Length: 518
Image (cartoon, rainbow, N blue to C red; front, side, top):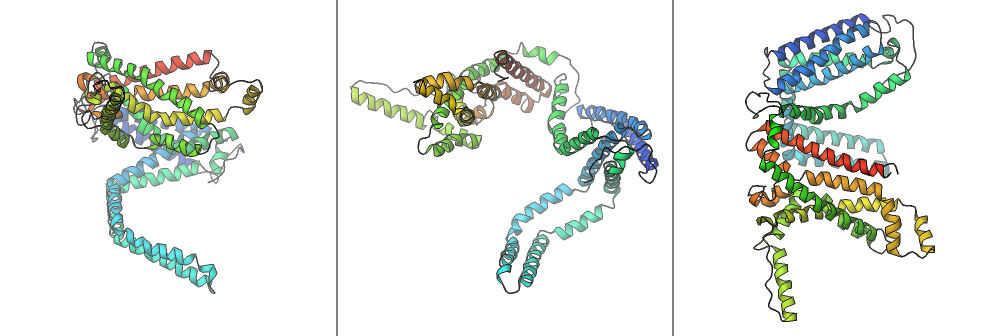
């Protein structure tokens, strides 16, 4: 990749950059985007309906405006013309390549090849043998010959593998489909746009548009983060904006959406089920967050000592955080089973043992746990706190290891006890870490879904008498069971507002105390 330079030239000849061709291409891009905007807006030969059509229309309209402006900027050799033209061409090249692959069923072919790979994977052993032979090349009398044999064996193994996967017929079929207009046209557009983007990326374009060092670095930075940025806009920011729009409609996910304004948000305040979910999640957060944070702090203090075997215990306590939430929750579901669960069995045996020692006749408590409306939410709290404990412990442990040890040495000289050192040194200096841990645990608690959903299966995840109902579960039920996408989106944004407000208030309070600036 060429390195951009800040070199400025007062004039640029046609030999430096084909400006006439570039202007022509900019005009074609602008006209094409305008035509696409009109086609999508009025559904002229476009099979995109509903909310998605207006999202595409808005995106294409913005792109069309930029394309028109880039014509003037390119004609006058302003850096904005180069930057806008490069990113438009880059996006058109990516979009054209994707459209070509989709029209040619390339993704279906790759999926088929991947399925056949599982059946032909043994042929990789030939390649492995070739690689193994190459490892002994330097130990033989004729290393060059052995390396040739190694490369030939590896190539033969790959060839056999590809043939067994049916790659050659697949390539021939793909080449045949390239002749179709639905595949050939987007391919040509992608190639032309890619070449234009590459041309605008070159040193010649940098000199032609008088790009200085700062502008070059900005363009470089945007280009290198573009894959992640495109993914973010496509799979996160884009859907978020779409869901915000949907929250103002009564869309059911199937038919045309009707704009209802703030009606969905108004219904939330009178929806007793939604208010119950809010009450549940606030109670859950008030108990589950301290239950996962406070023990984590004391465990971190214990693991921060230099006793033998502490590295093993650190790994053990962190295991719940890396274990799959489905598997962990299923284990807890069996443990908390009111009839055959080990927790109730343990309570029964302990009660019998205590009764035999004291001679008292005691009746063992047998809570219904996940099937009892009074304790179901508490059961979810246990699972949540246990799973978050290891992660919080590791964070606290990292914070403790960053504290200056000279402070503890000075406290030892002054005769401070272990508890006084922990209370007066460790806890105050851990406040920035504590802010992060508590905030993270609060956000996870307010987004509660996995634990009650799995614990209550195959029963509804809201539990008996809506005892384990959370806003995210209510969102799920409205969106995917009752097909009220508009109302579900309103629930999602109301939950977002709650999380944002709680987080903002907490950070503001800590900032006033000088914690975040520490």
